[in-house]
Image 1: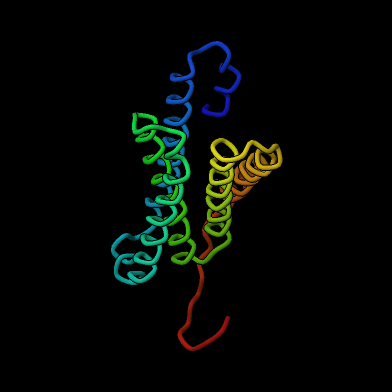
Image 2: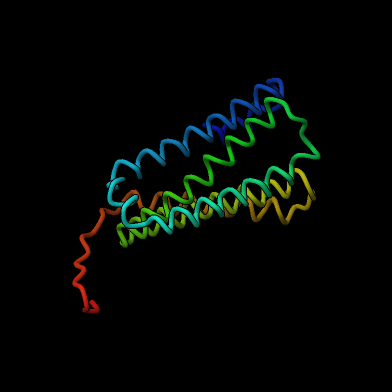
Length: 173
């Protein structure tokens, strides 16, 4: 729905377009997060992947900081700025949870989901560079291409079922 709003950009005020589009995008990322979280055991993840979670948290804080520093000269501390912060946190949380999900399940479905989340994040980071730093069409093309690739990976993973992986200690399968 968020992407379809681009057809209405000439007919509605920019503030409505901006907030509605970003909130719809965030909602879609939250729904993806919920879908992943339903299929993993939080207790097992917290118990067995502590170092992973700490490292991912540090990386997420750093990336969110860099993104906010990139846009801060262009957006004053307003509702738009707060929305950008929340948007970036949700997007990075999706990437981290999808990576933990892949490590946890180690199957093709979770790998495709991780690739989809990775493409979303790279697309958004490049889009920030395009919108706020330098307006080159190459950045926009790469951003849109990665976003379409993310849809491809998410569609492919939706057609798969999680496979049972037989892990035997000490043996390579």
